[in-house]
Length: 469
Image 1 (cartoon, rainbow, N blue to C red):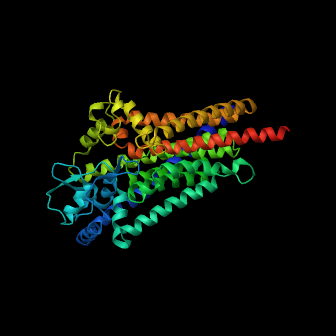
Image 2: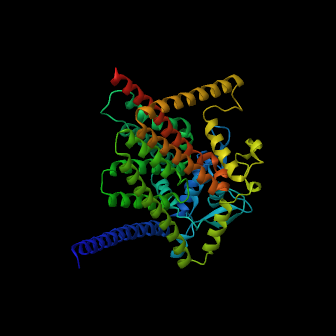
Image 3: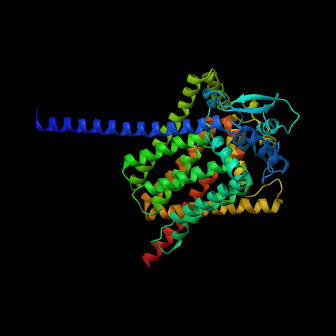
């Protein structure tokens, strides 16, 4: 064997060993996570449902929870309250068999979907008759955590604490995304990322929805950890993404997972490139992290289905199939009235286009709502938007002439992130339309990245002009 053949064989053997080592580490991480998840679910066997139902009755009498599955949002559109009710109700009733912990049962009124009313039925505070339904297709870690914490510290305190954590994470990310080495407009980039999110993501409304606040916290926390792990070895980044994807699936099932890749691209990758980190390194590392996150998320999802199949008689595979077909439906006839009644003009478009319109409209009305604003204000907003777009194009052309690579990278990241969002809305047209009142937040995250890009390009042009004087 020649020296070249020997070196090639040795390298192949080392690569194989490294690959095996990586997979063994990921398997070990997943095993520990799965044991933790099942242990948390098993705590339902000890859950004091009678005491909990009494507390729910007290919360209802105090007006802290209602039987309304939707309420008026700050925009005037419907705001989702049913998701928080799931956190308060799924798996909260007495469970006698181990396998039943995976069924994630909850109560609905007969012939309707309303888990909020179901809570009152369980508490004996409603005269309606109830039926037991199942969310076995999802992990509901959020429900296990929330119900124990409601017993320990109460619902008002829990809402305050997690809302405050959400605000603190926004502040930390704004500070961490700022390049402290420079003393010009680059210092405002951190604020540019978070400002649209703070203004247009219904932060006030999140205070009354525990589960959506969880989603915001976990999305922001994923970005925070990615930025902290950025200089680590690639295997560490893969493991961190894998772990966070698995935990996200356990805690938040299918609630806005698309926001995680969007924030990693629109805020994470952009903030690093704006700090002059090698674009090649940024793209490699963010790709590895997202890949690990997706694998962890999907594997955890599938594991729940396997556990349901093994320990229960529930037809999990038929349920999953029906839900996938429903949520990916491209039939505009099935779209709900949640935001549909405000978008009559869009009803003749294909379902996926309607989902785009619903989410983009939800974003726009957080800025200027033509239904309630004067015509003069709407016209002024349109003119200002047109001017800003022209200025962006002008600054980008100038930036491209001065340092083309930098501008190509930031433009590509913004474009990929936006196309990913549209692709998600297209793939899950039914879901994205029905739940546009919160799925639109992915666009708010993307808008923060675009806003930071505008600020950075302007700052770069000014810096170059000053250096050339």
